[in-house]
Amino acid sequence: MKLVLLSGGSGKRLWPLSNDSRSKQFLKVLQSPAGEPESMVQRVWRQLQETGMADSSYLATGRSQVEMIQSQLGAEVPIIVEPERRDTFPAIALTAAYLYSIAGVSPRETVAILPVDPYVEASFFETVVQLEATMQESGANLALMGVVPELASEKYGYIIPTSDEAAASGYMQVSHFQEKPDRAQAEELISRGALWNCGVFAFRLGYLLDILQRKGLPLNYEELQKQYKLLSSISFDYEVVEKEENIVVQPYAGFWKDLGTWNTLTEEMSSNHVGKGFVTADSEGTCLINELDIPVTVIGAKDLIIAASPDGILVTHKTESPRIKEVLKSFEQRPMYEERRWGHYKVIDYVKYDEGNEVLTKRIFISEGKNISYQLHHKRSEIWTIVSGEASIVLNEKMHNVKAGDVVRIPEGTKHAILALTDVEFIEVQTGSELVEEDNIRITLEWEDIALQQFIS
Image (tube, rainbow, N blue to C red):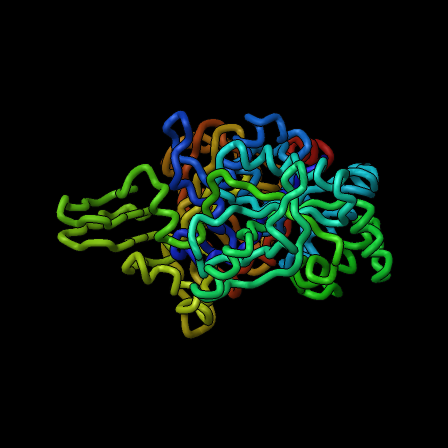
């Protein structure tokens, strides 16, 4: 059995800590068993390792999240990369092509799809594994996993079985689905044995490959990547699940929680205060998460969420926090904080002048032994001021060592890279006509390849 974790999200529901490159699953606001800060994706991957399932698991994500995943899980984690952000059907279709044409997975193999960020206990993953036996026993084309509801919630979709009588192994035939009903509808559905739809389902790989062939889509991963933008942006639920008649659902009665809003996330945080600042004792129920270098003080304010990051500041009553996605619907801003495979950076300042010139200032941290790729820019120059640590840099095939206090000037068109000999931090000031990611012309990723070019030149 292969497990695929879907990692997506626009980063709006937990703004300002989340953004287009750092979705909710990457926020290190939970606590590991060792007492260290831990993100949702780190927690899930740790659980998969503890249950022995990590070796048969993959992550499917867009290009913008690859370096974040590598930063938090390591460079060796298997990632299936979408060329651009689409909905879940294109993502799962591409995953199937990868498993078949790149990983060599048999069409008879069972594949389970699940979100990357469920907040669950170990028994959840045991039930996921059970879906394989459920499919074999039932002969179904799709096997879903449904959470036994604790209450009549309006936040989740529901899976309605044909009856509340389960087979010997516990699964039930699926009648239909209901998206986010009102309270009265939810109560009526639960009385009929309905389950919360937690977004987990399984199928034989060949089942989905047949669907791709009927649509005239290639089964080769590279070929499907080339045609990816032609695929309809539609969910797997609408494109496949709701059209399939032979579906069963396996109930899960253990702990499950969706940490998709600020109020649900803060319920599972080990502390109500993260980062610089003060929260007075009479600020009952208030949670402060501060990623800025300036303190935030909260006095006598109850049941609030106060979140501050380089992307912005949020102050909201806990019960109103789910409105953030709607409020920010038309708000667009470049990410001001990003984690990369080599470390992280924070935008300190950005100015666009009337004459068209732009200036962007970043504080960049690179972990010891890591490097930024060998690259050049056509539309900007850069100045690096080394704040701490030691590093080697390459400028047009020439190697230099730098330390705290050194200043490096990088004119437009200059090939450059940096390798951290120790943990290193520097201030980067970009100046140019257009400061965009598309102007990062990468020559090579690995530092060893850069050194090799010195002797060839």
